[in-house]
Length: 433
Length: 171
Image (tube, rainbow over all chains, first blue to last red; front, top):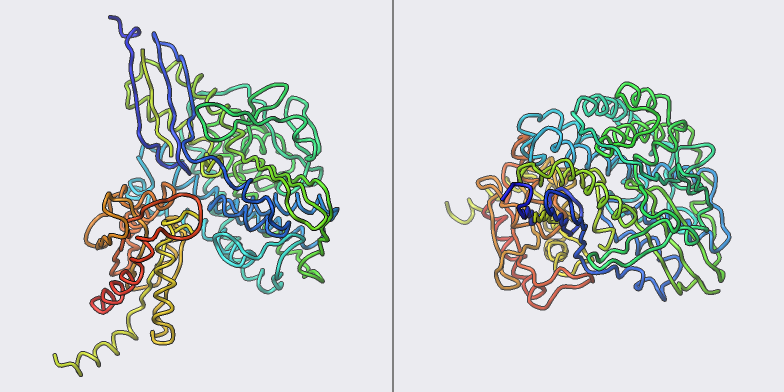
């Protein structure tokens, strides 16, 4: 029997350095990829049901529990959606503070992924621990950079994980100029460390892999998107956040506990740092643009393996933006805008570290939640990850089992998938027939 | 050493050794929260009696956050939920300085970059506290929801007793 006609099964029972519990199954028949499935085992989401009957003011804190890595994203999308339902716009210094909090989360989340989860793939290590034996100073730099993000979360969010200071309409308590000023020196160090991070990852070797993705992100006329903007794509999509359900649909697939989200007209699409970057390059800070140029990134990127470099550029941006906000901060008169509940439907969409996170709430006149919908970034990328693997494995079907398995794991980690968010473990199985 | 000498030695050591007990877990994944419950029960037990350099902390278990939590302390005791195949509520003990922590031992409690990775990364980087003891409480369930299963909840006072005994032996 020739090699190409064999049935081969490659199975990894646990895919490390991915947030959550799921599996990847790849079937190779007669030397061709026959099937790819991203399987998510964790129990189906229960948060949407849990929100029914709760007060509108509880949504940010309840949804923040969905993820330990990106609680701010959940709080922000929830706040914006509830405020939209109640006809309230939060502007001025409170809006700036929300953006600052998001900078903290981007710094924390991106640093964790770049240094601890993704870089080991490019340098040939099985994880951060073994990488740290050869690169102790680099790993220490990553730890300190992440801590700079933690510091923002602590000052503004009340604590590092699951910030408790966020409320519908703003904050429970706003910081003084002096408190924010205390963050400046470390953020200036962090900006230099982020620039060093871009130079470091620019030297990695990237597989030659690109796909014609439909990139989807928020876009805002005046700023790199975090909390606000229209949902746009590079294929002409440009919609207000409240039109999300007109253009996107969630589908149940047998092999996953997480719903797959698709564009009704065109199917799979791509969300995350690479989409955000490619659709909003012009809005990056001068430092971030310059760093991108030095790293050999053009104004757009379609090689998901390079997403580590894009995250590094966004680290530079997040430090710059945090410093800008702190410098111009004026303490608002009130820590929050009053949000009087009214009957209605509200939509919110913000840029979580992994891509757009959509929330929708139906409120009654007392502010009680009748219905809730949450569409996290990893649900939106599931189909795209499967398609990536299909194309990625095709020219590599003859690779030795261990090599192929390891490279497939890398291709999945490009997305920094947060399966905890998507449903709420990943093992990899390659079947060859 | 007679009792009085021992008391004096303890009093001196107490003020010299900076010590942290760190409860690890996710409060919304049932028995995963047992480390947090143990930390809170311990805090109630010792409130007002501990020297100022001793702390009871709570942590999600994400590796870098945990490394931050024990930085600056000479000794740390970590309490976390484990899934090691024993009956629920069973208490496991590991000396984190003397032995490496098997990844599978603590994996279930957080995502894939958790307590075991924090200890091993800190070992490589020379950032482990001088003494580090890990208590793992065998969990029954990690399902969504708040509150512990009966077997695990009833183990909490015993966990606190063991931590207090551990601290006496550490100092």
